[in-house]
Length: 130
Image 1: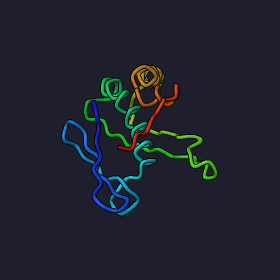
Image 2 (image 1 turned 30 degrees about the vertical axis):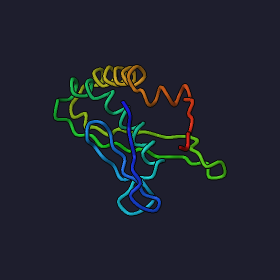
Image 3 (image 1 turned 120 degrees about the vertical axis):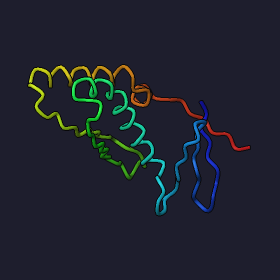
């Protein structure tokens, strides 16, 4: 699958995927910065990887709030760490089931989150100007 972005003005792009979704990219009002997109990509990948297990243990309609906190190394213009928190209401889930849920969620994320696995491994990247 390929994603595309089209310049819409000075320092702004619209990113699109093959499914018709779009996102505004830039540094202005109503736009995601590339760094924020990276943070959301990692957090959302982990949340989606965990979703099946969370639904199984909690319910199909469980509520969740995803937060990604960055530790930015400004001198090197990169992130030293990203901390992802997925806040879910575990309700009356017994402690032994909570431990089982945490184990299964961690395993699912480790196995299924392509973004996390890529960041862990590192990814070669190239740039071509035509």
